Amino acid sequence: MGELRDVVRVAVIYDGPEIVGFFPFERHPLGIGKPVAAGLTDAQGLVHAKDVEIDPMRLIKECGLSVYEFDHLVGGQPLLNARAERHPSPIIDLREGWEPYTETLKKQSGKTYKSTLAKSRKLQREMGTLRHDYATSDLAPLRTLLNWKTDQYRRTGRTDRFAHKWIVELVERLLATRTETFAGVLDMVYVDDRPVAGHFGVRTRTTLAGWFPAYDTAFAKYSPGLIHHLAMAERAAADGIQIIDMGRGQKEYKDKLKNGQLEVAEGRVARAGVAAGVHWMMRVPVRKTRATVMANPVLLKTADKALKTYGRLRTVLQG
Image (cartoon, rainbow, N blue to C red; front, top):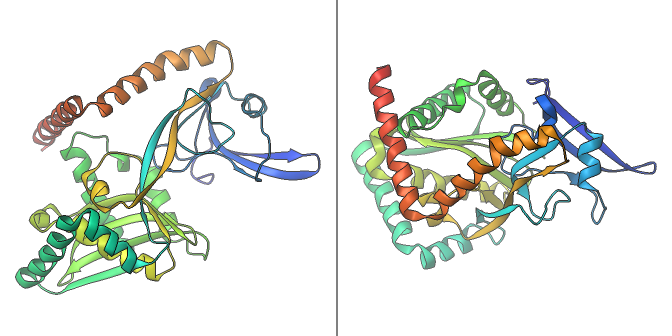
């Protein structure tokens, strides 16, 4: 990210001569601080020594920040305060292995699991042989996946993240990054060499963070996203992945596949001043309104319907 955007910084935190932490952040005008790659990262905060005491106010002051805002702050962070809103981040927990996970899935989402396997068999009967490429480094399927995701954003009235060139370049650079402890991971499901569904995310040695799942809508009746996620989880487990973090947010497929959850927080740390006051007026009421909508099923359904209607109208007008 530092190579792509000049707002990226990393503060090095010392206790005497010893380095005890790192604080990655972006510094924007008026001293507004954000997580690196805000909007993409599902785990935000400091990397720090266990039990180290860090004063959040001093930290942001030393970093030249008036405010640091976050929406996926990892639990237990020094930046976490009582006013922050906590949210679940659903996971696929593979620490016991693939087979125990599927047994859990059969108990809590048995209908979904059986229907997904049935649809996979139907897809192969009607369309051809199923093939799964896990952790491929080919750019062509990545571009196919990003096109699907752009179409999904537009169709559902959301902002197209890939209209930002730096995000596309970031994803391409991550795809080319392959080490034992960090890599971009692209995997795709094909039927007779035609791409059906896929996902791009990043991994550590033991955790795969979900970023961009998408599928070809021509195959929607077969639930290709669920077929793909089960295939991805099986291969990831075989590759040593213990946790697939699907990220904060209410999605039906997450509810069906999860067997655990982490907790992340949304809020801000702010020093008294004009910049912090302006930031509060611009951001906090909007965040609270969004939280109210997300917590109310009727309001959420209405908002989602309105966005999809907007997406259809936008597609027609642009077409």
